[in-house]
Length: 295
Image 1: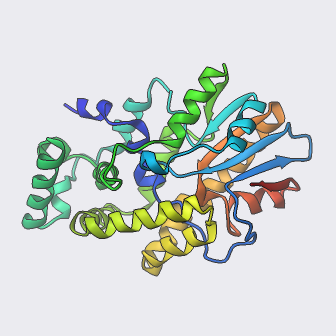
Image 2: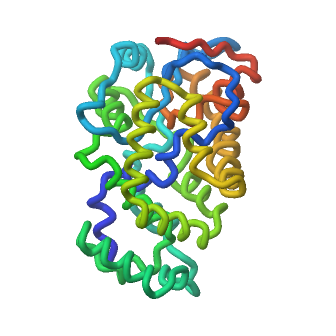
């Protein structure tokens, strides 16, 4: 019934969680403009932390030589999740379903639901009936695949291919289920509101994504922070920050410590997880590690 899920690139299925690299407080502790950082000290093997953006057009895509060299020097690649996990699609589908007593249709007016139905039929050839038991974030992730207006390139996918070519293991700092559980902290009706806003304001969403790409290419973490915060009201921003940044970053730090002590590791996560008082750079420094920018 949901075979179409397996035909969608895995990184796009997670875009609902990944596309907001600015989920940080606007005030950052480190104004250095860099996406690549070296982590050392306290018994760590030489390791690196790289901030990604999850999809860009081919003309904007490049992996800097310093990033390639840093990956080459390490023993393994760690992404937010292991996209090679054999049970990826099954776990995704299980976590994406609404409770038995709910349906997607119940969160929308008849007119808005028809708007959703028409869009998914026309743009993707998917009958809305096959989506009616899905949580709104699942449809949101599919909408985000339209933001680039091009066959998008994925930093994660390219890093995985490079790691495989070098005979490196690829791991995740969290499981698929852990990542998707973060979405459950945002009520389904709030998810539905954001889905509808994206659909109705697709031109604005595309423009915002282009701004985000330019800020990313400029390695402007502070700019990314301000862009995302400006797009959300205070209540929604607080919910996102807690669920998608604060809690996940705190959970990742012990994993980063464990893996980097065991072997030299190249960590690649969404750029918004790096900066700010609740970001990985600051949290790692709090633990006594040296975190140094590499241009």
